[in-house]
Image 1 (cartoon, rainbow, N blue to C red):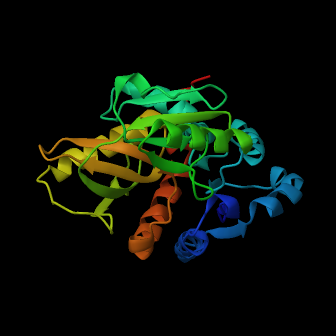
Image 2 (cartoon, helix red, strand yellow):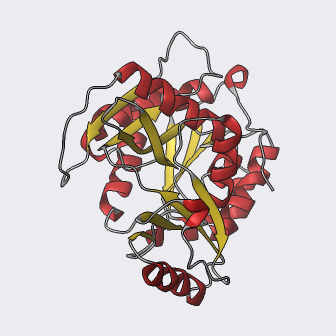
Length: 295
């Protein structure tokens, strides 16, 4: 019987300045899956919501989803409950919401900057947790949707302005995060340690961010890979990307991680690896469901 996969695009609002890149990685993955003889349908989130009943009564083998909004994630949870694997697992996508991420990464004791979750309705004019300015202020739920969702603040006035802006937009929580001086690195990963299969080995790439005063501090690439994989595992992510900082002494800190990035610089290679991984994950013996939760 031919396997049937459903792919869901990311919401346009959640792809600021990355709309095309996000579209292309899903399309490229679908093409690689079709080469393997798999029937693939790609839908926008709003299309899926309209066709929900059709897909509930289908013979889907797997759903691969870039979407992030609460409404659709709650619906996809019902598919997981019917033992249809969803990649990334829905709980893992929930865990990338920063108000969950901070707690989970602290519990996992991964190398992560000092971070504090605060209400946007309170005054925070004092330096957070005794750390001096500057530090980062990030919206406390999803990742960037527009300019100002992540800001480096240098004064108490700037901090209050950012928090007031969040409050006005209906964002109730923010993360205040320690600023670390070092080389900024982007990383991508595919695979979970919970999957052991001779047909797939964990895929990993990294590169330096542009537009920085790059020092090229010496560090262990193997340590970067292990750290990013441990961070992803703490959240339950299997297809992921993020940012890390390498300090002058070679220490590495993951500063952010998200579900299913665009893989823009490695699109063709990543699409092939993702397709192979999805095929492995569609097999019953390889299904993994994230159980870690933070309320």
